[in-house]
Structures are given as structure tokens and as C-alpha cells.
Amino acid sequence: MENTKVELKLENVSKSFAKIETDEVTHALTSVTTTMESGEFISLVGPSGCGKSTMLRLIAGLINPTTGKLTVNGEEIEKPAPDRGMMFQKATLFPWLTVKDNIAFSLKMQGKLKGNEDKVENMIKVIGLENFREDYPAQLSGGMAQRVALVRSLINEPPILLLDEPLGALDAFTRMNMQDEILKIWQEKQQLAVMVTHDVDEAIYMGTRVLVMDAHPGRVIADIPIDLPFPRDRGSREFVEYRIDILNKLHFAGKGAKE
Image 1 (cartoon, rainbow, N blue to C red):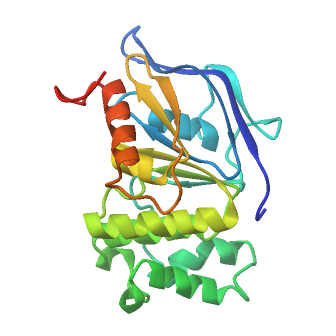
Image 2 (spheres, rainbow, N blue to C red):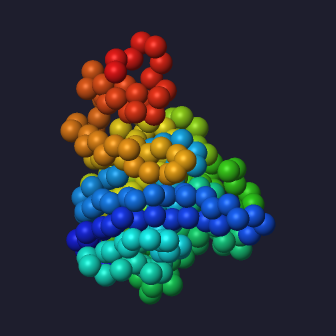
């Protein structure tokens, strides 16, 4: 599936959840229509409860929409598939496998490990865990485990890469290094990447587009193309202008921001 070109469409997609004990209905996502394509890096940013993770789970096929439909190259998404790789907020590693074997697991299951051992070793170097390759998840810190889970998702190079706050458990410096590593792989493979983040700077730094979302009900309130070359300068005037624009839309810019 490497380098497969994809077009992902969400057409009037809504998702509601009913509470069993009451008659209340939570409208997690309302009337989202958008198209995403290979070579794009879509950042989803917004407050808690705005439907970011719900949108990612719908794209992954883990849940189905209440109304509307999602398609990949014209085929409706009804369940998970190998063309959509997902990295969750929490590291979900196999406790009985070492760091090396966790990273290699999916390649082994697909019969692709032979000849790709160097790729596994390179991923171990990328996350700086050369001295922990034979350790088990219980021996790792939370940040280490998150790094292992991240590269386990990246190593398959799925045409659609779904990232649910993949770097949230990392310290600031490791986080910035991993942002660059994810971007490097994405640029090489020209995947479609869709990432949930609460970090506006991260959304701008990594995204070719930023979908700004709001809650109650969850919805997209702005679709902002980020017209900046890679690698990006976090301190540039243009970068700061994007930040102010997004924070304004989220009502967090403060008194000094221009409307």
C-alpha cells in the first residue's frame, strides 16, 4: 500500500451519542464536509469536547457516523482497514514484547520483516532508545512507551496516518524532535496525515491545513491553509500571524490581539 494516492471525503458527517440512563443526546460532531488528499498534513485543533478525536475515530472506521458518510477513493468507510494507521493518545504496546519486537510486530505479521530489519533499527535510533531495545514496556517511562507506539504506527507507512495527540506525553525538546521526524517521513512518503492536537503552535508547525473546531456541538469553524515552507520558523512574523488568527477564532488571543 506504499505511496497509494488517496482522497478522503467527509460528506455532511455528524455523530451523536445517547446516554443510556437519560434521554439526553450529545452531538459530538455536526455537519462536517471536507476533502483531504495524499500529501496533505491536516491538523485538528480546538477545545476539549469539540469532536476532534471523534472525527479521527470515524475516519479510522472505529465508529460509524449518525448521518452522512466518509469515503476513501469513493469507497465508504465502514470498518478499520490497513490503509488507515492510527496512533492513540495512550501507548498501547504488547507487554510481552520488547521495544524492538513491538516496533517490528506489524511488519512480522504482514510477512515483511525479512529485509526490513534496518528499518526497525532506524526507528529505534529515531526515538533514541538504542540502549532499551531489549527492554519491555513495564520497564519504560510513559514518554518512552509513547515514542515506541508512535514509530510502530509510522513503520507501516499507511496511505492515511491518523495521529491522536501522539506527542502529548513527551517533554518539550523530545516533542520538537519527534515533530521533525514525523514530518520527514510524511514528506518522503506523501501520505495523508490527520493529527489531533491541543497545541496551536504544533498545529501550525506541522500542518498544511489547520481545521479549527468548536464545541457544543462539535463542528469545524475554519479551514486555514498554512502557506509556509518546510522547515518552519516558529518565531517568524507569518507564523505568529497564523497563531493569532487561530487563537482569535478560539477566543483565546487575549486583549492585545487584533480582530
